[in-house]
Image (cartoon, rainbow, N blue to C red; front, side, top):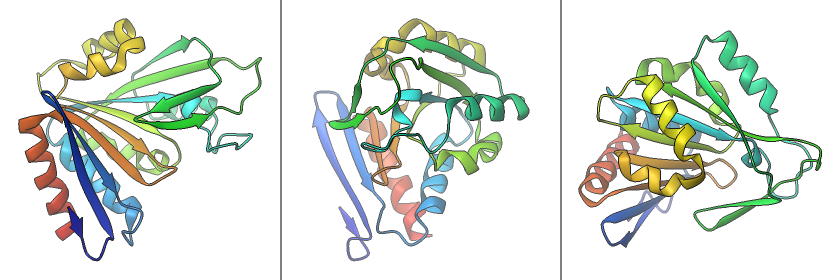
Length: 202
């Protein structure tokens, strides 16, 4: 599916009962605003668990991240956002949906993930930082509280793709390529495409 002379590209891949929707928005004039609008509309009136991985703060062979992990933690503390920080096993590179991101940090550095839950209203608090690093979003429609969502990640962070089946959808925001990759059920994929179309048409 193409919009506006290839300014926005949307395509899907089906795998059994799951659909992976790729949204390439690098050609959209106001791409940051478009991305924030899509994320906000997908969250709707539900809770969204945001997951940041320190290994994904790097762009290609870049030696330093655009934003340090400590700066993210400081921001969450100052914004009084409840979060969970977990130290993870170090590996030299990370592959997300077929995209390999090499990690350029020193061997002495530690790797972490941090997760926090937001609704559409307080999503605005992080608009200024979501455009600076790659991020996971897990949208929940089951009515769970923030603490329950964070506990779920703490118990399953090594099996993210399996954990995603318990959510309405999982979104990976690749800021290095201006692409959103959304993993969802078949019925949800139809709703998601309609939301994307609406956000682009507005």
